[in-house]
Picture 1: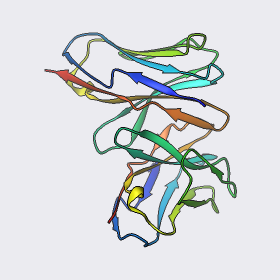
Picture 2: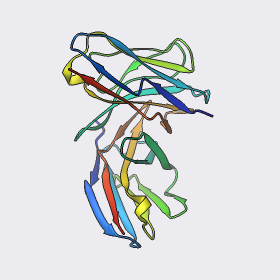
Picture 3: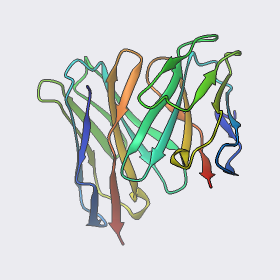
Picture 4: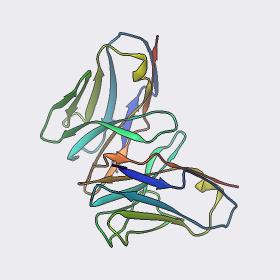
Length: 111
Length: 110
């Protein structure tokens, strides 16, 4: 049972480049979340989804887009990466509104 | 706006001691409160979840309490061990979103 899998684990981008982070869960959870974690700022919610085909904005959604075309996958996109988006990104899933299962994170550096 | 505060930001205690980590929140309408552990370079692992109708939850050497009226939760760790060294985060919220505290970095001294 893989749980929550994030791809890739590490990435370095140049300012202005685009990329997509993939989150996959095999627990049939309805809810999925994307967070970023920065030193001194804690975990902040970027976007979330309460079911297939639905998405909603979190605390810091600007500069990011998401899609939930399949129940098991939640994609986070950066259309034009900025140095301020350098962070560790975590995906989580839950059968209810309580993130209980986290991925190991994606470390993203924007140069 | 919901705010979650954890004090202290860091804590070092000798092995074997009992300790308490504190979490305070501003929104008393939260429906549950969760404690997580995070090891360096890793994701979060759920430790305990307290529903709003409950006062506490226990798992092994861990006990978490919730007092919604005062906006406080505590995580009690009994007989601490070096393997307990990690960052502990609490998270509370309502509706479809939760807010995390910034965590307490715990170091158990051998």
